[in-house]
Length: 159
Image 1 (cartoon, rainbow, N blue to C red):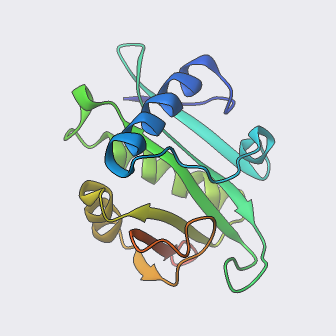
Image 2: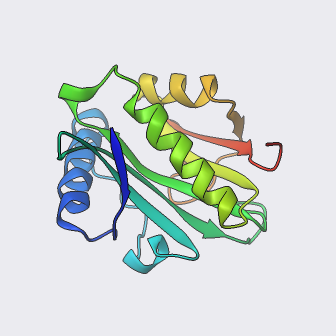
């Protein structure tokens, strides 16, 4: 998979984000309504990537910087958003590849902790994050009062 940095509103990113939103509708009944500003995913305070297989977009994800406020965020946080792999490309390690690239670029930008929100109806996401060194933290953000919400963090400063 060839991972490329693209703007959040790049046509390939928009296509994959629409697909992940549809996935949320299928699993939860609604799209993710977390407020998003395209500029939050632009350097130096954010990044968005699309993974390509034979020049076809198959995966995406991004991070946006947060430096508080506590208790939801800490200085140096990078919140991961819109991690997604198309159905035909699942089970091939592409999500793990995108996650590693997001962590690498967040560290390069000076971020020290990755945080994210996912849900109980995404068992593959829960397994990916747990197997990648993420631990559960108190809920934050738009869905912090939702029973199906789960939040995770990983210290990126440890290497």
